[in-house]
Image (tube, rainbow, N blue to C red):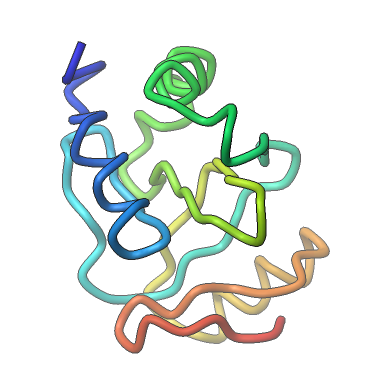
Length: 120
């Protein structure tokens, strides 16, 4: 199955392989600017060897309600031998993103414009 809940899982896997990660909303759109902050208690990870299309589909189905909110995105990245999935919220301003990250005790945020991680 290539598309689940309107999201192209095959494209997500290709993005992970080619760029090391991705962010998509339920309409299959990627954020073009702003700052991404993980929502607390929604991070999930597994080994690179165990990660597959079913990992994404299961996570999407389990978290569809939150992913339906317009500022929320499915986030995925690889770190070492693990692959992580989370729900990230997009913020327009750095100050709002930092406030959200610190209140949620996040270590970092992602700056979409520069494709860099910023320490929270």
